[in-house]
Amino acid sequence: MALLNKHNSDPSQTYKMAINQFSGLTDDEFAEQYLSPKPRVNTETHTDMEAVPINADIDWTTKGMVSPVKNQGSCGSCWAFSAVGVLESWALSKGQTVNLSEQQLVDCSRKYGNEGCNGGFNYQGLAYVKDHGITTSSAYPYTAKTGSCKGDGGSFKIASVPTVRGCSNIAVAIQSRPIGVSADATNWSRYGSGIFNNCKNNLNHDILLVGMTSSYYKIKNSWGPSWGENGFIRLAPGDTCGICDDKSPWVQ
Image (cartoon, rainbow, N blue to C red):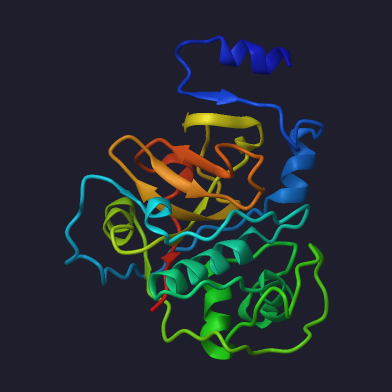
């Protein structure tokens, strides 16, 4: 409380801290339970979206293109929630409302390099869906634990998983649809509201980029709607929290 009150009374700060479900955890406990450190991925950048004009502002939550905020629980499965967020946004763009199974990715995509509750990559989860399809969360419910695969496949299928990397390419891609991104969320546990800028770029969390303006990125998180701004966080523009450093996927 002393830390929170000192921070929130400082007029130079661009964001507010808040009491939430993480307040009883030490920083180490928070990182161990909710984050998944991951190495940087230095791979070819795809720029399929370069021809799309950049608008001044974009917020897909106001356009019916973002599914409700979910909660990963104390399982390092953020990558699966990011991947499913990409899929559900794509479905909404096609006029379909779906609630897809993060647990299927947690249990079944380990051959693609993911490690269930011990971490993974959103684009590797999407690669699994491209090859096998995915089912609904009601057919394969979330348990917040790594389990044995109860069956590959599902009726929801995608054709390809393009990616971009770098701030300028992300700014172009977000004009067409929400995209999966990675960030350093080490200091996010106390976030309450405002534009966050207190982070480095040691990537350890996958989320969904749902909009941006000249002042901030708008991010959908997977820690439930009681965290942050109804489950969202705004990040300062630029490579804040390393958001531009990893491959950022969407689907076609």
